[in-house]
Image (cartoon, rainbow, N blue to C red; front, side, top):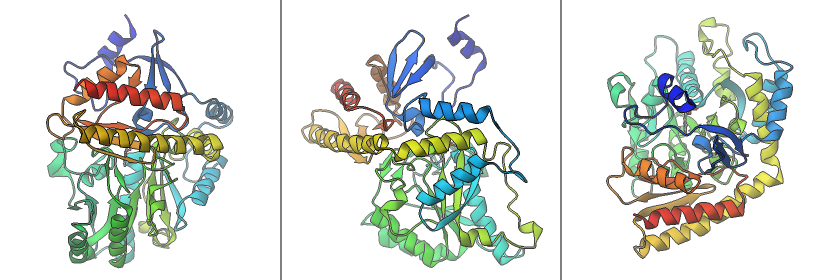
Length: 429
Ligand SMILES: *Cc1c(COP(=O)(O)O)cnc(C)c1O
């Protein structure tokens, strides 16, 4: 039996309708931006394998660091024990994160990093105000948001096709539109009105990822953070997608003066090599847990908390991120995006291709194909993916939203290839 029929018999793939599904692509190895199947076909990974990969696949520097660490210590319990990779990584992260953040809590993916953030914030109020208090329990979040697939993360994610089966079971959230010139004052008024009951405000700064790569401006978000802070609401930046250079700065929060009280990291944290989540918080939150009352302990942890291999991959990835090659890569993609954006805007204006709302920030570029409704279930997505695969490019539109988010090691030639491929596909619509 070949690999694909074996896969069919035993595996359930994520986010994949199981009836009439296309065969998955069997990938044998990766090399830089390329994924290579068993027949030797090469596909340019233009979405960094679901936004995680920074430096290319099977990077020898990270591989070597992993091998050395695996031969020394692969994993231990992290309650009552510690190890060098976890300590070194926490120090390295705190030296580049916004100054307000001073303490690192580890978990193992993006959803757990946001779950931890929300639990940390809710229990902060419980620890402070006492067990009998009804206190602050609600969360504030944006429409169109996505914070992960576990129950807490689903609750603060917009009610969408992803969460439809679970709506009755999700906790109460105050949802507001993403801010812009026309609505900023009404959003501030909502925070003023509801603020005393709100424990925390969770947001994807500047780019809402799975909600359709929607972008909004830093100056409006900054006003909301300031307003939330005036009501003592804990501000949680979910930088699971935007972290580690994606938006052109190391963290999207750097586009603003107002810093978050908690930040959530995953995806690019390990360069996309190992699963790892980080929730870093400000000291005032941590201090609410430093008490003689043992019931005020943060009773949360995962078997693989601070896995030494994952921490090692993250340290190696951070080293690579500081090198000229990565810095130049981010700059190269950003500049290429600005040029491509101009071209897309001209195509839209001249009706050369059915596209809407082209946009870019740093290494992220997106636009909608005007075909059917703007929604995740739009049938354009699998069609575009198939057309691109035939040209040796891997993209995976969110409904009719096509986006590019390549690893930083992509060359100018590969960027040009990508652009031509997208334009050729657009000409067929
Ligand atoms: C992907 C994502 C998550 C969830 O991360 P997982 O590792 O897939 O659980 C949470 N928040 C944002 C902003 C994301 O993009």
